[in-house]
Length: 265
Image (cartoon, rainbow, N blue to C red; front, side, top):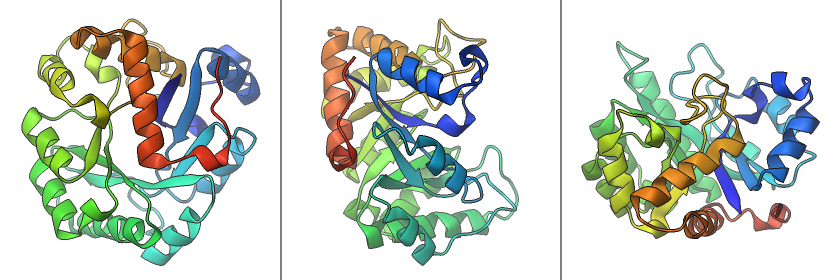
């Protein structure tokens, strides 16, 4: 079944679901999405997000502070480790570097990234990496901090084959979002066609980056099927085969099986 390996369920639009999160989840699970990873971007909203998904064992969570979040509580390593002890938690992040939205002296962003890597190593859980226009520094810090020890995923990948190859060498997976369906993403599609299938994940990053043909609507986990179908086309393979492989990859990286069964629609 489909896995949405990166979404923000506390931010999705419920307008089409009569503002009911319960109805939204029922329809999402019925669409064939059997597991989701709801990713944190700050600690201020984390308790509410965690409570929202509590009734749904098909949803795992991560804990972390996004690199673009400023004027937020800056977590210490020990705080992240304590929050990651939650049985539903499978990862640290999202974390990383973003030079597109942030500028000036970004020493604080580098230190935040290093703290998250230290927390992941301390609790033995993989990292969810956000990187944008910070290719060299992202790889350098991953190497310097020994991130290979825990691995993780470069989510919503938008870089070239050289970065993908270096990330693979560090033991990381690569995750593709709805961007893979966008008209101007030819280079990214070349990476998706070339990437080893056993190191690939798929995601929506919902409510952002809605794939074709749903552009103009808020994104949601059920649209991960468009990501799977487009990549399967690029690789001349059956979509069901890609869905099964990315499900197995998710299980292998995040090991969420102890939290509850997948939902099979």
